[in-house]
Image (tube, rainbow, N blue to C red; front, side, top):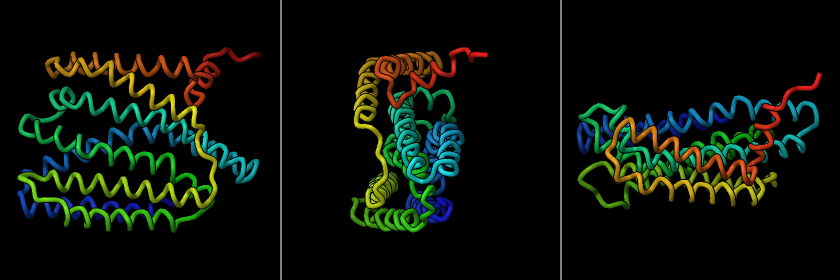
Amino acid sequence: VQTCALPIYLAIVLGNRALVTKHFGFAETGQFSLAYDMGTRLIAAFGSALDVLLFQIAVRTDDQHGPERALDQISRNMSIVIAILLPAAVGLWFIVPSLEHVLVPELYRGPFGHYLKLLLPGLLCFGLMNFAINPVFQIIKMTRPLITAAVMACVTDIFFIVILPQMPDASNYALAQAGALIVAMISLLIFAAVQSPRWPRARDLFFSILGVIFMALALWPLQGLPAGLLTLGLQVLLGSLVYSLFVLCFDIAGLRSLVFKRLKPQEA
């Protein structure tokens, strides 16, 4: 279903890259593109791993128990996706300098981190759309809202490019692209609300956000450390530990129960 809208999102990406090339040259386009491509892949890596399992559960529930029960499952899936993607995106923002130092060629460092941080809010919204919200429409077999949201993203991107002041680099295009994806997600949420879906529990959303805040507070002092593999490992370890403690203490999105159920020996 969602493949119907993907060419429109791709047109936004390619159009912005063409404009960046026109105004700043191929070198700037390469720096801009690397930040978007790597950021997209990192967010998608988390979301795809979840989607392979979670959406199949929803489809099986739909086949066995009908659409009402399937929508209940989708709401639980939403909670899990949010509980994973939100800390992943915030954590990525903190590790950008070390990630840049370890993985990015020296000529791309600096602009890569700058563009990735500008794009991250939009990339998070794109991940939430694909892996949390789109399944609502996939289950009820509706394509129009996905295409409409993509068209609105395209219009929003053009609007931001026109109204944002020209900058000495491609920052305004990064902001326009991120803003377009944010508007697309808001549009999908409105369309989903019309279909009366089951939303994630407020408790899960609250503790997910609270856990991310505490994770950010723990990672903030590490920003002064020299960028590198050691700092990257320390940031990932500390951030994962703090957020995992919240998951264990408050059973965010039922993840604690799910893990313990998997670890519990099966009775003969």
